[in-house]
Length: 245
Image (cartoon, rainbow, N blue to C red; front, top):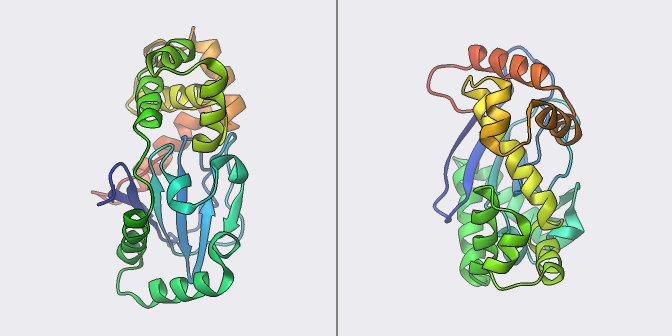
């Protein structure tokens, strides 16, 4: 079962995932422009920014995670997002093995691993540079469906400089981030029961065929299959729980 809540860290989300009584198999994680710090039964890992759907490996386990707002994680973790694109890496590779083991053990011993992971992120953020307001402005504009060229002009960057800044912050260029955020807008409408054609237009796609191509390319599935899987997950969720794509 997946549950999430807003984190005390601005823009972040704390989430947990526990195995179901009946294993329905791994659920693909779709690109969302974010990076996550994960705890899984003693291990600490970093999930880099995805450009395609990620299918978790291994058997079911207990997870806790903190999902950072797009562009916020690199300064906190101390690594450019492009170095982790489409990767899951042990935190020890970034912060040192001994330190990562100590932190992992501390979180495992806590009554609430998710809260302990959140505390770790808050302590780290207190010593890290503040989120870049320019990068946050880029995210806001692209999330609202504004064109990349217009966004570059609005934040005072040329196309090349915006691309370089985006690689460090998001792991890929602004056009890829815009596609991912547009897909997330469209799928949110699909989950709300909006017809595919209306969801496509509402999210900024040219038409339903355009959305279908983007869903196949970025999510690795079809619109019909996505909607069917979502409906099945919703009906199997206990009342009051929260899930994401």
